[in-house]
Image 1 (cartoon, rainbow, N blue to C red):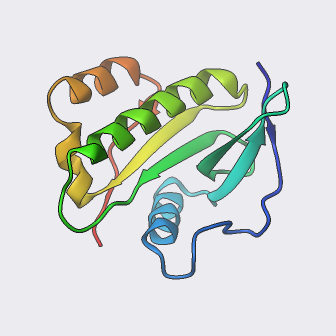
Image 2 (image 1 turned 45 degrees about the vertical axis):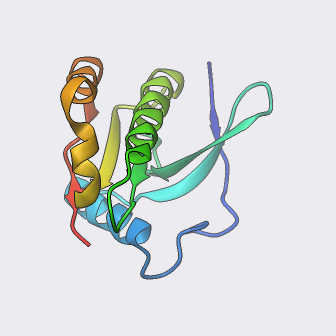
Length: 134
């Protein structure tokens, strides 16, 4: 399957200046030595999927889980959904070399038990290690 990277409405799309998401992408980009921005992708059938960060060459694909405040069990579902999306995109975007799930410190607790093991076993070409402190 081939996906086309589309131009977003603005460089930062839905991430406002000073937002945790913007800080997460900037910090990860600095760490990886590349610029990451949110972008929509177009599937061959015309449907769209958005990634919360992608570099210009389409080599790095990023999803963010930026929840803050009190932990809620539903956050674990967000983590799993984003991991599933990254696994699919890793195999669907021909240029993808790395997928990265970035979480806030609060969300780390969602990465325990079988979720952590599944992520480790399925993500051999992925990175799931960056924690951004708010």
